[in-house]
Image (tube, rainbow, N blue to C red; front, side, top):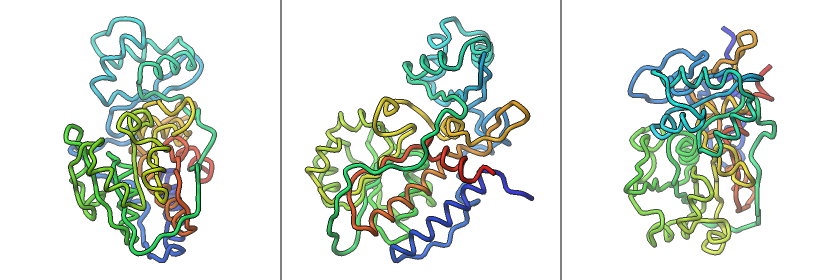
Length: 325
């Protein structure tokens, strides 16, 4: 059977990660298809116009397609404001009817303003991770990392780096636990800690670390005293892996997004005639975790510190461009 675009991308990215691990002095034997799987409380459905978890749907607008993700209660509550009208008996019927005659640009702009995880299919054209503020540093002894990320992409990145011999602390805020923290494949090799994000104890951990992984938007972290200037002053030798939906810098930095809608944003979809379908389960998440680990190992092997800006949508765009044939 010919593998789909998601599996081709995972296999290709895993080969690159294995090469980066060898350059770093580690050995990784990875099953790309296996890394696309995750533990879920209920069985997932096959991908199609709906995502396998049934939280995200392709919705046709007047001049194109949107990927609309309503995984959170707050997203569903925002639908009337987004569509400027009352809900029908079914939320998805309201969304489908409300988008049908409107332009995708109009719908996307209003969704972004409301903080809804909505993307235009194929909107992202600039692929891959980018580096900011890189500087040469000296590292002695074993490497340590702090993983503040949640869900899938960031924890997977940390798990892959841990398999290369890097010791990680998995830190969760008391009021916002990571729902995947108990997943052994993602976090089993990490020491779990519960700390407030603005606590002196967390800053001490970051000050002593070589690597920091985050998956929050820049403004949310800045409110806790974690911005580039502050952390560079705290720890000049820190490699910060900043995983976001649409990018760390610029106007896209405050957009909300998850693995399914961001995969669609990057064009990482399959097509049924003129209809885009999801090509897997939240594909942008695991592929970003793999790509982030690869970029991190290359940066560490080169002796650099700084910020790696790695977005779900950008990784999806890169995967679609390189493995979509």
